[in-house]
Length: 498
Image 1 (tube, rainbow, N blue to C red):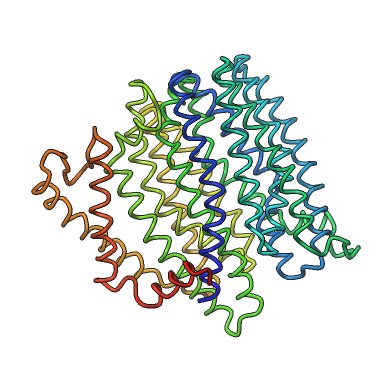
Image 2: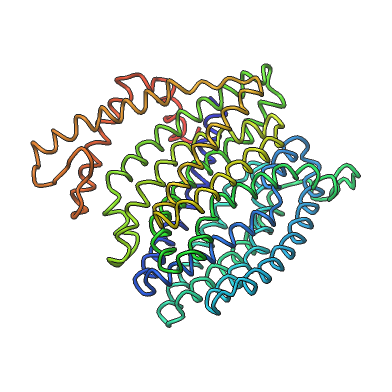
């Protein structure tokens, strides 16, 4: 129970920082789509997604590994941090050199080229900041990570809004992104140094850049292949169909990029608890399995309703995110890609379990397979189905990833019960919707709620339908015994600061 409270609390702290940034970023994105249209949005998306691949390369798979190694031996905090920073800056410079060659070799227009090169400057900054994140997570000081994310969000919003007002367009937004990353680093680095210990270092020969690179290589290859698989569709679209098609696809995919952070943050908070169980538990395999099962259950109870709401409300949600009739096809993209959110939530838990069990090498085969599937399907489907083809390729990749994660978990000898939480939570939501639709149609027939969509043209009606369904859903969770007294006790303790 104590570990569960720890995970939920840290997830909440991380969510506050990150989602405040995403919320403010939403207003910037909406303004960008209105001012620059699909073509400008496509340029912005290409710059952001290419840079996200470079950040993964620069990080060299060290994020969670640093946390794991510090949890094992806190006295090595300084040695691990500085070794990781050297690796990341070296690979950051190499990645920037590669991107220089790429943008000139492919013949990008000057605006796209400049956008990619400016955004890529953030690789060095973010790599250093994420090393600080790993140390803080290992020392269970994630609140300071939250502070840095809040500062970054405010700086980004203020500068991006100002520079859009001044007519700097896409480049103004990208420069604001780089400046916000620098603000975050300037806050989190001194906070890390002041609030964590063991900064004198041991001088141990056990911690070296060569040792750390060898340890991280499987994770590096796995995360790099995985990020390429997730982001390559944007690069392929801009090469094959141009900026406007990329902008339409990004508007449909953008909500998934935001919502996928929920399971990612939960898994980040979960990992230290899994690692402690693996290292110190009386029955480590059983303890890890029990913790992972509970994590998957709670995640599904949140993620599945979000997924269903997005499918039923795709049209108004995309209209809210991106201004302009040219983005209307993005609703179809959104309905397809969001189906992968439930699979991604389970995959993030499986991923952390594999890492806690020391199975990093499986990530290479897993991610390489997913990458090949994704690239192959994009090459096949984009010329035929355009942006919807890229969306189908993304969903298919998530399905393949889920199957492989389950297979590799089986090889560890751990059995993670998932049926009760998934089937029970799904049944509760479907029951709630089955009650809500006839109830709402009888009480407020003008809301136009059907089995396949929520209200389309009125946000008050949309929110009202969600509220009614949400209340019935919570009741169904207890009626079907998906949630019980133990869960209520944990909620009370969290509310009371326990």
